[in-house]
Length: 338
Image 1 (cartoon, rainbow, N blue to C red):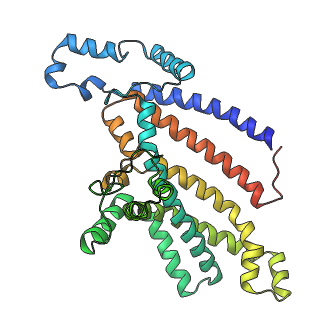
Image 2 (cartoon, rainbow, N blue to C red; image 1 turned 45 degrees about the horizontal axis):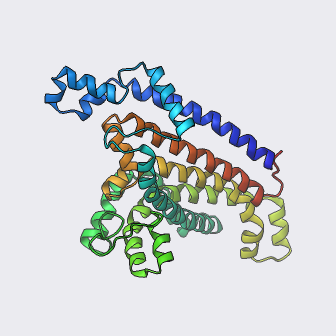
Image 3 (cartoon, rainbow, N blue to C red; image 1 turned 180 degrees about the vertical axis):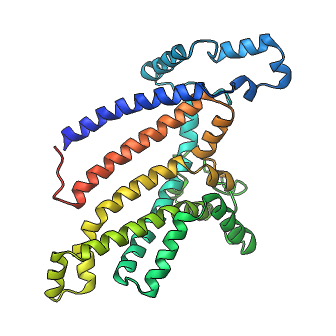
């Protein structure tokens, strides 16, 4: 197992190098210019200002030379560059915005896994019965509804009509100041023993996590149902039933373990997709996460920030894939890695 993990980590380095090349080249070949996105019209009319701007950010050099400088800074100085838009180090900004996205993604996946697996089990047990039809309709809705439309619907319903949840941000800045912690406010509030802050953070977290988790929940529900139905038609399940085992024992102790292996894959990929595709949800709920940061970087052609976000998401994908492969062997003892 250790040799397998080391081999995967070596492949991760190669993959990240390829991602850095592709992202750097594609972002620099976009038919637009950072000067037009970041300078005023009067500054654009002054060639000296434009030349000084390009020299300051290294845009006057060939693309290949810019890439070599970028990689040298990463490997030697552990520096992802400086944001053209804000003038701050990209690494610091990623450390600022990523905890918000990570916290949101984790809670969204908790909602998706708990309800998705539960709905899938119930749907498989009561196959073709009314409860099965209802849960299948919910799962199809989760996969089909656009996230931005569902976000607006949920916000209007629970924030304006019923006024149950707050409409944006991660906490109420008029009441709390959770700075100085890890940036994961739920863990910070628990470690500080500030349960008033914990309640406020969870209230702000619930709706965007529900919207993001709804899509992945639909996938997990359908995957769990189909896998469980396939496993429950196996010979060893029929043998267990013939011995007089209860339905609950057959499903939980015999069928569910084998059915969950593909579900782990769906859950892992769903988690990665949440990190890379939550721009609309973060924008609508004013969530200060990596999605909003990536959007502003793309709009302003902030090359260092674009590359930094892309490398971060690539690292998450590779690490999650490695964790998924390891979990295969934990859940199914028949799977062994060399």
